[in-house]
Amino acid sequence: MRVAINGMGRIGRLLCRRLLQDPELSVIAVNDIMDIDHLCYLLKYDSLYGSYATPLHIQDDRIVAGNKSFRVLQQAEPSSLPWKELDIDVVIECSGRFTSGEKAAGHLHAGAGKVLLSTTGSEDIPLIIYGFNHHKFTNDITMVSPGGCMTNCATHVLYILNSIGIESAHIHMLHSYTSRQSLVDTSHSQYRRGRAAAESIIPVEIDLAQSLERLLPPLAGKIATSSTRVPVTNGAMGDFVIRMKEPVTRTQINALFHKTAEMEYKGIIAYTDDPLVSADIKGNTHSLVLDGTLTAVAGKQVRLVAWFDNEYGYTSRIIDWLHYMKKAG
Image 1 (cartoon, helix red, strand yellow):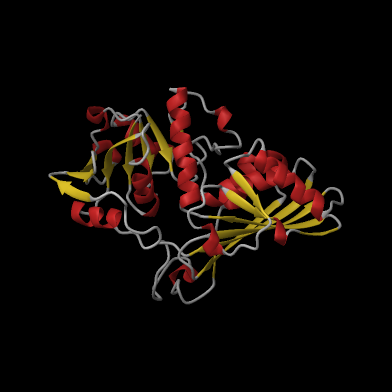
Image 2 (spheres, helix red, strand yellow):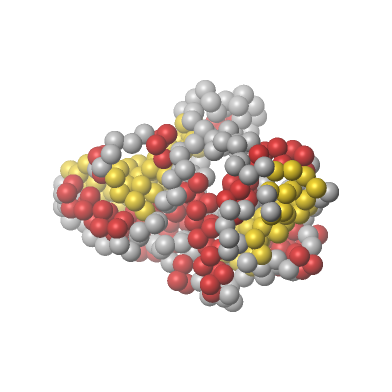
């Protein structure tokens, strides 16, 4: 499969690194407005995941990694990209700028076969979560939203618990700070996002509840979500407080997640009885790791904690999507 990446931020660069090591997928080109020297440097050296194992160098308009290479483009608009000429099967849209059907379609007009977002797109793009409803994908679907890292965590937790029955759910996502925040106080339309990310615990606005209600219509009107950015560079923790329709026990809930992690959700979710902290999750490929040590039950009320690497776990699902599309194609 011939793959292109549009937008070489955190997710785009990590995907590029990982796809270069995948024998079944080929990175043909990447597009970003930054210059090629800077991009090569950021691919070589990563503050979270370390230096890239394979030497990288620039050759004309290409970055060479061992016996592989890919073209580097610098176009602002998808419609200007040479996807037809390069025979691109799938563009992974990682810029965060082209997430509506109309804007993402620029990649299709430029000749790409399909567009896979790296976020939750607008409602005119099918929202399909790998491991949950990816069986709904058919080869005639040209644009897919695979959700964000928080959606990929929360969807599975709610779906599994709703096999017993959920009355209401509040989900609080504690998340490492991101490039959408500032390292020093500055102006921002959301005042708190303008505060120094490494200095404070910062509540931020999220649209997770809307995404979850799209995916789980029976829970519409029953989900509330909130998020707090904390001063770490990687890792996230989903804190779920859920009122069930019937009394449950801690043993029952942990057994449910332990079983599903070993069976139908194997490779997507994991279960642990180890006392984890966020640093332990770095590089984990699952959409969530359910921490059984923190499960608490009081009658019908359940509190669960799920850890996830918001970058590595999420890019693992993007790679799963590419392999799934390749088989479907």
